[in-house]
Image (cartoon, rainbow, N blue to C red; front, side, top):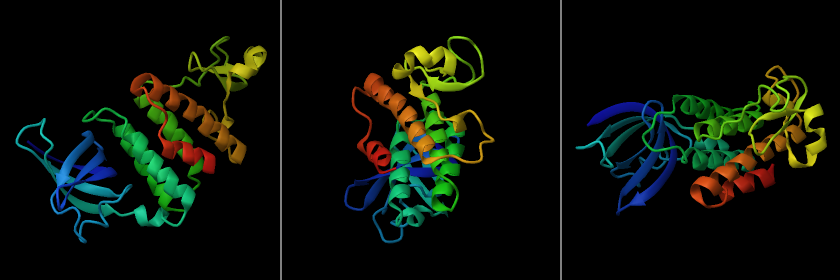
Amino acid sequence: MQWSDSGIIISTRRHGETSVIVDLLTRDHGRHSGMVRGGRSKRHRPVLQLGNLVGADWKARLPEHLGMYILEPEKLRSALVMDDAAKLLALQSVCVLAGQVAEREPHPGLFDATEILIAALAGEELWQPMLVMWELGLLGELGFGLDLTSCAATGSAEELIYVSPRSLRAVSRQAGEPYHDRLLPLPSFLINSNQSEISHTDIKSGLKLTGYFLHKYYIEMKEQDLPEIRQRLYTYI
């Protein structure tokens, strides 16, 4: 059994004296693990860092086996975020959260979105709203997708400013006003792609919104709290 693909390194762990088990988010083979022989060597160490894009050749005798990776660097970006605490926290959080999708199930949309987000983290682009939208997309991949197209109560697409924690749907200003203390704020940039200015308050509201449903996912599906690194990211921002 053998395949080749592009993958983003989302976790590594030691195996034996010299090897490393690498978890990749690949384009066509989903989240997939494999062993890299000699992965703790000086030659491999700069490559086997979170967020790096690699070309992966995986080989195993049977499909269910762990298998072996041969990895070639394509884009080494982890070093570009090391001097920025917020970006480093974001990269670590993205890698931990991406590790929640089912293993070996293709998620090409998530791969592409993760590749775009990490490229933004390593560059000078406005990455914070992209992070919120990435988490929104991840929720959809995990089965907790939000419907922000119309009001859950009226069906209207006008003045959508809330999200219902129960229905996972948007709620309009008028319909939500009597229950505003039980609803989550919906930042406008999530439904208006043409919005040119995004405030820090919008970013916090967006992370609070996605964080609420990520927490709900972890409690319902994992019976544990949201990862500490994601909570630290929200507090830092």
